[in-house]
Length: 150
Image 1: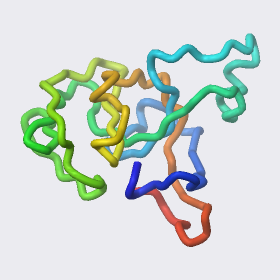
Image 2: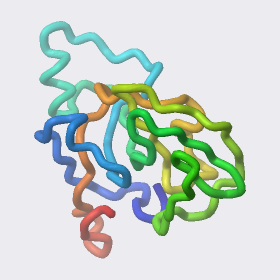
Image 3: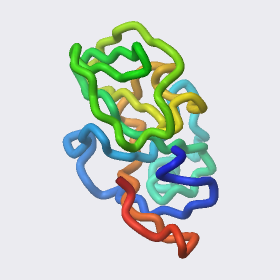
């Protein structure tokens, strides 16, 4: 997620809002990656995941596409429903292309801000919204990087 987030940044993640109703394009969210089995802790699985103590890997990326939208990556730009989107948060333009893909219901399309060095929806496809843990809101460590996540 460079340049907005760096390795070893510590974040506050809001996990209370009603997902997916509150998800918007541009949100930075923490989620369980698709196609990876989660650890089974029996009846404790859900509470342990909610407090992030399950030991399951999580990722952080930006929501770029919403359910029903057609996403395409071409000419170093991201296109949604045939319109180029402005992205002042990316490190560099994507050096790859992706054919048009319609985001299914109950899914979002996630991309890392460091586009050319990110395993994201352009690799593994749309993310089921049920995998989302919460919004990343604020960096609190290290002190010189304190501030909101945009």
